[in-house]
Structures are given as C-alpha cells and as structure tokens.
Length: 208
Image (cartoon, rainbow, N blue to C red; front, side, top):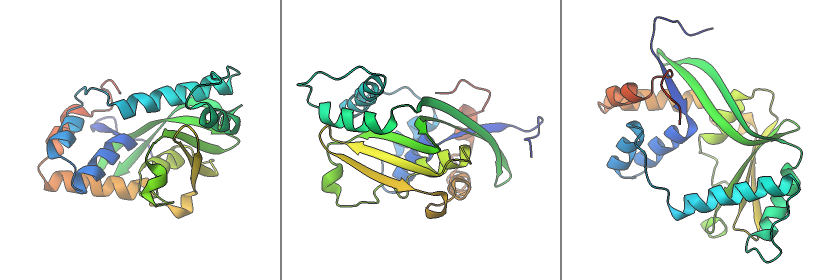
C-alpha cells in the first residue's frame, strides 16, 4: 500500500537504528542526539580504515591488484574474489507504515551477487570479541533483506586485513526490521524525542 501524500513520511536507515540501539545499551545521549539532528561529525580512524578497505576491495574486484606489500593485501584479495562480478553500492528503498507512521526505508548495500547481499567490514578487534554471531542483532541484515526481498542471504565479510570472517543470515534467522522500527518509534515518543527526529528526517529532505 502506498503512503498517503497528505501525511508526513520519514526516512529510516539501518545506521539510524544502529545508533539508537547503541544509545539504549549505554551509548552517550548527546551522541545519539547528534545523529537525530543529522549533524556532521568527524570521521574516526576506524571509519577511515573501513572506507579505504572497501575501496581497495572494489578496485581489486575490478582487476586492480593491491600492492604486494600492502598490509591488507591478503584480506583485500580474499574478499574481492568473493564479490567479483557483483553489483556495487546498490541503492534500495521502499515505503512502510509502522506504528501509524509513514516511513521510507532506505539503504545502500555494498555488493549484491547471485541473490546474496554482501557487506564488507574492516575490524581489528573482531576475532577477539569471541562471538561468532556478533552482528545478529544489527539492523543491517534485516533492513537490506527487507529492501531486496528476492535475496537469499545477507553475508557480513569482516577482515582485519589478513584474516576474513563470515556471518551469514537468512530472513528466517533475524528480527524483522518492522519490529525494530516499531520499538524505535515507541521509544522516541516515550522519551520526548519524536519531535527532534521528525524535524530532521522528513523523507523529502536530502539523504545522507
């Protein structure tokens, strides 16, 4: 069912939901408010490393090998081999009505290949987290599997530049994104933060 044109519609992304989850688990309130206000923040070194690693994976998948002595060469090659031939940076969106509110669910997936969604992550700490299902509660897989209903699986490809780890999920193994979005909606209204969200996340505003 299409959203009604006479009712406000709000942008909903997996990164917004992830920031909310982090806040609920004890993350700084001001940090979450900054996300709600869509304020530009300086990238951390971890963010920069992640962006650079993904770029090098894409270049390698397209035929440009990393320098032999590059500290991430092994991880880059291994992931590039997995995603080679897939579509890169695919934008997806769909409308949804949740808890009486109209939303535009939106996201950009790293790679899609043969019905599988791949997300590339760079992490120096993943192996030491001791949790093979670290991303099970992340809104990322539920959001993208919802936006690409024909997808068979969502696969996280995590690397420290040397080793490559996988976490794979199907729609049946994860919490539907609608349930997480409903909890988000209720929680913001209960905390008096709904007006902050609606002021900055109208779907007709510029996306980031």
